[in-house]
Image (cartoon, rainbow, N blue to C red; front, side):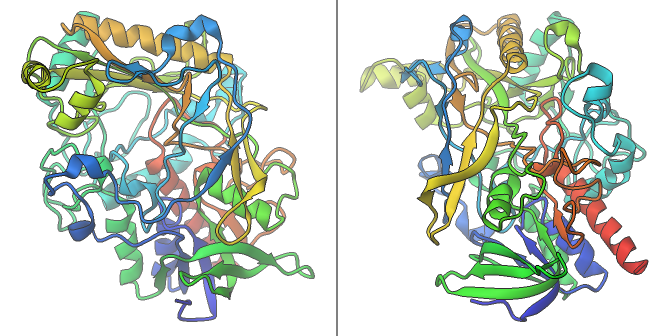
Length: 548
């Protein structure tokens, strides 16, 4: 299906946390906006499986997958062999001596990857904006924390963030709109272990309702966020910014609309519109005064490169991924860690960057449900052998006993990590797909080693026994958070967009997703920052239009 009109004030490509807030802000000012979304539009009340008896076998109901390719594989450093991913049921996941590209966990659909995110809503550590100045690594952001603070507050109130009065290392001018969630029993057990070590678990800041808000009920603590929330109490973009944008009467959302190319007028040097395919694979062109690209840190550089937009040569460089570690252990008590929300608490102890730890970036750690969400996962992941009565007895004795602790740390940009076009693989429309190459540097490996040691200390202090599963980015690329391929900066020589997210040299082209991040932060979930950046960019654009 083609768009309703042939010309719009702005075309936004992507309806996730970078696209929908931008579209809403412009549409609420009276601009006519078209949002092109490559994926489907989901109905939370009908499409998610959490109410089905076989929910655990279904996962998120992907209707479309974006094809990607991968570059060279990194050789594994044997001194970090103890970080390899494994569980009792399957043994070692990666039996080679090279890092394995497992998946890029993206969701094409109206709302983007927030459709299956775990609801975490974090502000970046204030020092994360000045890593070059403070610690001599990576680069500084061209903006400061204080520039984003009012937009953080706006987003928190729109999506409904529950959080404590204070969170370390990030100041705030107004309280969170909702009270924090209580720690689950499992997290309380882990917290007791943390307290013995002199550290503390704070309630996590999450876009998961702790009370009635925006006409939605509070969370029922089913722990199934990654399956898609059928109750609308998780603040995903499809139930927050998308309806707000459509309610203006000025925003049209077009699902299954695959942007093929951004067209530039050679005479003026400005963008003139977008060519896209509809669900029937019919090609269309839509004209626009402005185009905003918000496809994520993999698909955005793909679109720009396929559109031959790489004047500075920086598109696709500085790719950053999720640097993670997690371990699951059995506790002698039944803790039922599957009850609650996926990550209800945070250990902020090491979130402040500190080179004295052996690596400059910060990190966060947390108790988590891990993979212990239901009996099927227990049976498949946590048993070496056994069937029939043996398996039944094993499940009876251990189901609900798994507790898990994990962590995510800073990923610093490096020359071996980038996104480019694959010369051999094509998408369904005949265009080269994005190729991801990602290498861990020494700071990432050292931070993984640090998180493993702290995780085991916490599990042991909590009274847990045998570790039954370990997973990490040491040997697996399974990224959920990706950043950096269209870096924001003041100098066009080493960045792609300026501090207002306008593409250098093309004033009516913007990029409003996580690809603009100069650094990844200390393990914080990025969606809140993406949304805040998107709102700020839209507001600055509107101000510039008013000034002519």
